Image 1 (cartoon, one colour):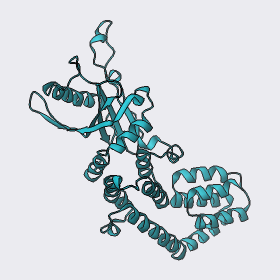
Image 2 (image 1 turned 180 degrees about the horizontal axis):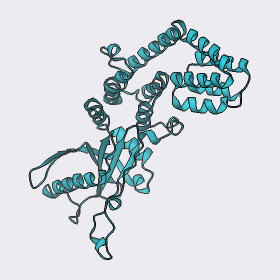
Image 3 (image 1 turned 120 degrees about the horizontal axis):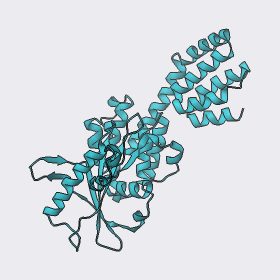
Image 4 (image 1 turned 135 degrees about the vertical axis):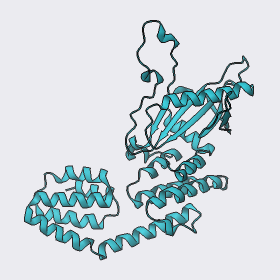
Length: 334
């Protein structure tokens, strides 16, 4: 993860509302219901081990159980590349955290250590395939020796593994982050930003709105090639207005500056080579306009179509539809 992305992510996950939504929305385990979120607080992530080596952890929080004074510490690792030995890294970080808790006497009433809940947030293109259990990284040992082996599991949240249809219905800030990370069009981004404006409308959420604005400006919009358009934008509503205007301009330019002509020429070429070539061209256009997932669904729908008039109608829809969902709805109605 680059420095801008990393620091912006840390800013977002330094907001208590984000952590609450992460736990309630993505950790489907009974103990979550026993947490008292009114006690949630961020703690320092800088620890010094006995040999004076330091480690700056990403984001660490703690929260009490509702019925006891036992603390749960959340250690969150942000990753954009796959680390096959992530379980070993987390074991080291947790050891440093436990050393710090011992030094500062932050123990339970019975002088026991609190549990640590390690989470890995991953946003790389390739799906995560590294072991999430430490024991899977250690060679099998003779009988009796296994009891001395360390044990550690971590929760993996692989952003790209979530389907948009899973995330879209959720009124959840972490789901909104994942949707923005995986957006395939500016229309998708506008929809999520509209959700955020609605969800974060109160004065008490000003800082959280600001955190989202900073992340979107530093990471999301530069990736969309909009660096020059964001210098004086400091609010989610302004970002939405700018994007909506740009989408309108882009669609107009797309129609007026060669896309239609190019598609018509492509259609003529497709007619010469046959129906199948015409379908291939349409799928490519759909992918360029609405993204890979939409084009793959469209490819299945187009397969049985043999009428050239219908294919020409689909070409018009590709131009006129504002989003992939509308296009697929029309295709499914054929």
